[in-house]
Image (cartoon, rainbow, N blue to C red; front, side, top):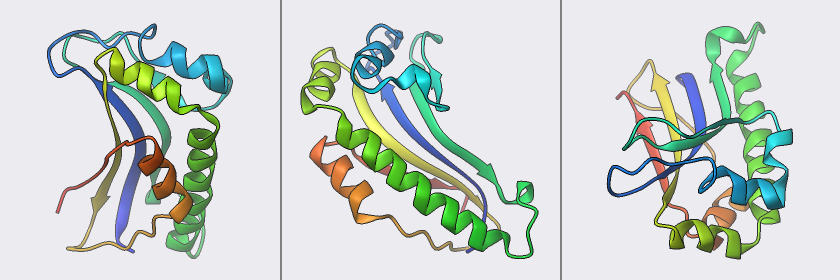
Length: 144
């Protein structure tokens, strides 16, 4: 694994320049998932055209003080993706339909910075299943 940093983010945006507000994006999710009681970073009410975000995980390999930092990162990612899958599973499909009906386009981003021309990342079936059930596309972004 040559990942130097990785972010796991649920993004919501309008196709036009409307503001993604907490009321339209975060509050419907909070009603059913106690989102405000998690350690997830929730971002909304930014400039027009900017995405609303739920940042589930941000990590740089340099933050891991261990002889095998990539193994630690791999383990953390597996646990976090399972946690995200469980969170998504607990949210009724009707809530995601409400977000989409309000005009929000949702997608999940895995953003990486790598130091080589490839990286290995295993996506747990439960994580992929929940994205599929809620029809949330997955985008993987890398510097290479």
